[in-house]
View 1 (tube, rainbow, N blue to C red):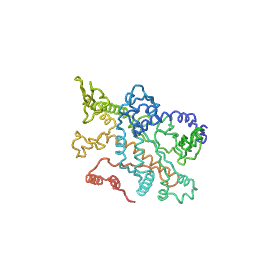
View 2: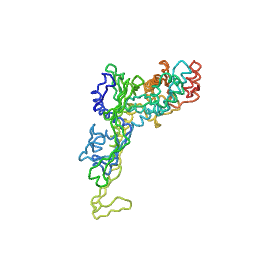
View 3: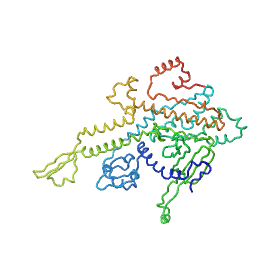
View 4: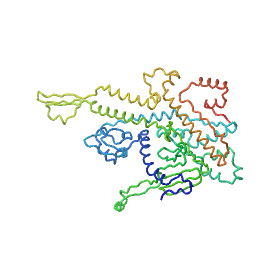
Length: 512
């Protein structure tokens, strides 16, 4: 069955265009975004059942492959891979043995360090309403909603998805209890709405769902790429059911050889300002009204990219350098394998080919021309070491994350007892973090405003647009001197900064 968009009552939602998004655009996105995630996580796969990998197993090979091997040349892996075939595809190249494969995931720890600097200590979302009592109430409600959706883990997941894919979307979903409350008659709702207690009780029913980039298929306004007319997400959902597959002869053998696989289904969800629909295998299984009256999606770019819906990924720019690093490390490992162990060439000695070189072993011969020559042994390769060091420095410059961030100190760092010296050393990382803070803080403000809009239209906690303005306070990622921080807070208070703002920056909360 095809999509049926009659209930949307909009000519802008074209079923043929949605079919193209799901059947073609989504497939291309899986290849692109899947590669970015693999380079970040670098998962490990067994070679069992992979004919190309199995064919290359030898005394130098391991019984697993890693995702970043996709970027290694065939002269190292012995496998010719294509962009569409992926890591698990490809064909074995004749006359090329698999060499020593070394993968050092320099991307993963850099992305994690960025996330730690951005959301390692969480954030504080503060309402800017004029009424102090309303500010306190709204802050309590928002804190409860974010806590019920994971708290600091929610912010860190958001940062990871954004850093890997370049952007992350968040859907603000009202749960069944909130929808049921909004459908009450005005008289009943009037007696129950407006209380903080009611909002706190229903806070856990508000779901903040992060949408990873491979799922997102937004339909943007043709004249304004910043406006989402309809939001579509498409993904493969794993079911809690299994299906047995096997031939008739296997069943005659009592079930032996029957393979069991987990069932799955292709799910498509479409959200419009008025209604939403959910399809499985393009068959409508659920639909309902959208009580919020807007597309409840907040789009956050990791780093702003002008005139594009997608932001700039921190992983994508590091992929070529990561491939070069892994290639050179693998080359060095192969060289060490051949040269690190001493080898011997025996001339004029019979039967020596069956004898091992070991302590106490003596070879004898009557041939006066016989000899045993030693060769091999590791030799210094300064150009190779220099090239690897330059690749690592290029990764530092491209990502803005230096090994100092991970606690790796070198002699050239010098004395870091001064806070100014530490900030100078981490200038690139701090500058990039500040740039990200602006993008993510703007997204968190929009999420908070969307939550308050939902509570308003449902009648749970009526509020105005003026009360939907927020500030996002990020704690400093660097270690700080407590005495200096207190003196700074004292000076701010003397300059007229509100006391509650100063206390929040210090990490204290105002009691209502």
